Length: 208
Ligand code: PRP
Ligand code: URA
Image 1: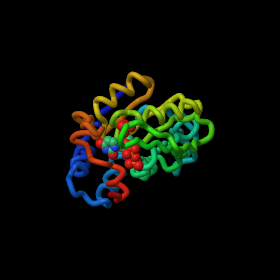
Image 2: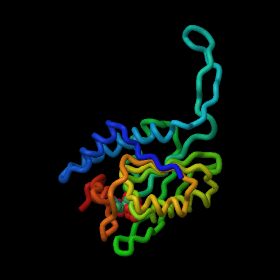
Image 3: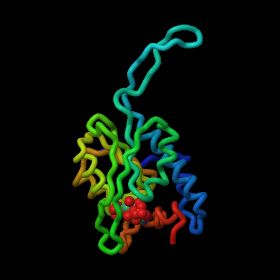
């Protein structure tokens, strides 16, 4: 399975800022979006391009265009919405497929409650975006939905991933790719990532 911890200095710097206790909603939101843009750059490195002829300012030339149907970005409600602007900054013409999966705070089990996918999922690359990959229950539920719709190429972009979740997703869906700004130490007894970011959804939306 392809798991990439993107160890770029800009990502490390920005993620370090996000880990500070007492960070404002505004700053957390801005940084989540900026790191998402940098992860997108890394996760799209292997996209295929086709050459096409255009008229340039000094005459005809061949340029590159991304091959195939447009990418679909898949933000997982709710916290994934915080990464969506940064991904769209990099791929402004992407389609967006929204998936709602919530982790039950007591059992940590995922509850899928919403799905609105782009058409022709079988022809698109899906970029799942969610700040946290903890037990991986949420990610597994989202990948199940995308595969049921015919999607065959799935990449997941995360701000922080836990080793326990990575092991689990590798066992259940080894064919997807993971790009994360950090692989942290472990989960605590409540399923939160340590040192992590705390509750990413609450920090993005200013709740609690
Ligand atoms: C958080 C996070 C992931 C999920 C990760 O969302 O954004 O979606 O938990 O946990 P898991 O890997 O153990 O499933 P949450 O369910 O808290 O909802 P929210 O987006 O509304 O904050
Ligand atoms: N969800 C979060 O928001 N944070 C965690 O550490 C784990 C799940």
